[in-house]
Length: 264
Ligand code: V07
Image (cartoon, rainbow, N blue to C red; front, side, top):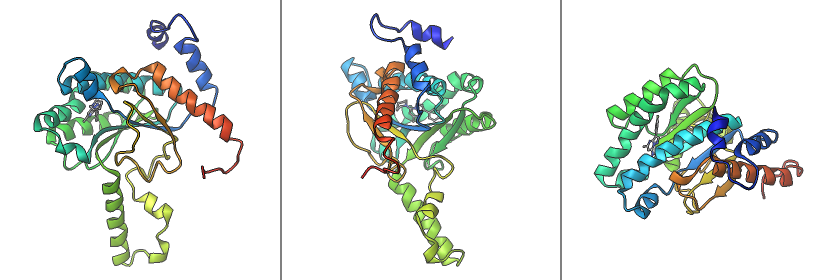
């Protein structure tokens, strides 16, 4: 079915999406892909639409990219949906954004279940509005037995906040004499991050031409490949996703032979 859907998009020249998919799957697939979904507001402005129209369109891209990620065989897809900085936006826009998880899940939860996708979340859950929390909890519970792709939403997430919280927990353990100061090392810190159960991202994608991390997974991205594209998130499609993975695989082939090279 996916094949049929994708065939429609095949251009006159170059390999089809399904041929590219087959080739990508025969090479090293990144286990964890993280995406900063930028450019929704700009997409809307270019069409003289309100910013929220861009966010809504961006939600459809989430569905599309989840499907192709699952098809590629990616294990974890982390999407930066709402940052701790985003509370500074106009109230109306925040209200709209906080309704998107509910709308996304009302529309797509059956499909996610059918595709064996497991929904997870990182970020400060407690500070979200009750209706947003309810939608997310429902999705996490309804998909908790699935063992396919982990669709991990970073919601009200900030990397520095995450690290500060980890430091606080570790300090408390030390104060309680449950650990010695000497036991504080990278792996202990890692085990107190919100991603402790996940592999580190192999690949970070940021759309919309901005080339910065914006407080996203600073610790976890230490050794990741970065892929930046000018394409705005609502325009990011299966072909763009495959291009990012193909680029990753090219780099991997070039540097993969230098054993133990951690990029310095
Ligand atoms: C949001 C759509 C994608 C572009 C970026 C900003 C707008 C999906 C979700 C979501 C979150 C949690 C969940 C299910 C779906 C979402 C926000 C914004 C706040 F369990 N898209 N999307 N959440 N956008």
